[in-house]
Amino acid sequence: MKHLFLVLIVFVFIQKGITQDSCQPFFPIASGYMWEYEEFDKKDELTGTNSTAVESIRLEGENVVYTLKAVSDGPKKKEKNHYENTFTYTCDHGVLKMSLENMIPNETMEGMKDMEMEINQTEMIIPSQLNVGDKLDNATINMKVSSNGMTIMNMTVTVSNRVVEKKESITTDSGTYDCVVISYTTNTDMGIVKRTGSGREWFSPIAGLVKSETYDKNGALEYKRVLKSFSTGS
Image 1: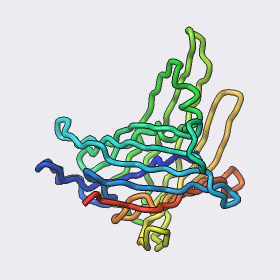
Image 2: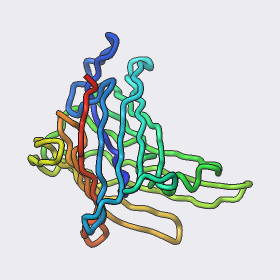
Image 3: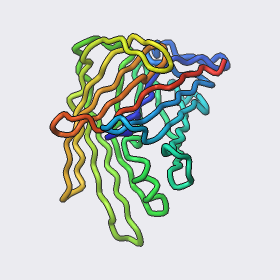
């Protein structure tokens, strides 16, 4: 899924004296951090932009909870292409737990905003240490949408075969970064309609998600997101 950006994934936390020693940094996140991305289709044509900023950080028991806000626009900023979403990540004893709601395309969420939604999921988990060859846990999200008691859509997305594939240095408009590359498979089940795809994400300990690509069932590129700028707010 193209919005597995989900996926601004990250951990460094120092704010107002609150810290969690077990969440050592691999991907950065702190108050004031902001990422700006450009999104491209398979023809390398610009299809939209996305900016994600850290809104707040708080303690819940022994866990650290990060609230982020993402703003997406089409290539030309128009109201119909504008979508905003707030989501959370949790740092739980050295493991980052991420909601998969951002795997649902913006246009789908926007079209369902006035309907009743029931979302159940097993969060995506990323440990604080990543080594080439590591296999990561699967994650699943199920979304049931109804209106006036009638089910309109029942969709399940499963992310599996998550592997730390390699280390690689890549360059974008925002700079050059040494990254780890995580590959994965996605399966989308909407009953009659089923879809299989795959993807890769490049993560840097300096800037978090630097690049992501998604592919169809034959391995052909469908979509990519590239970091245009990164700011720590300092």
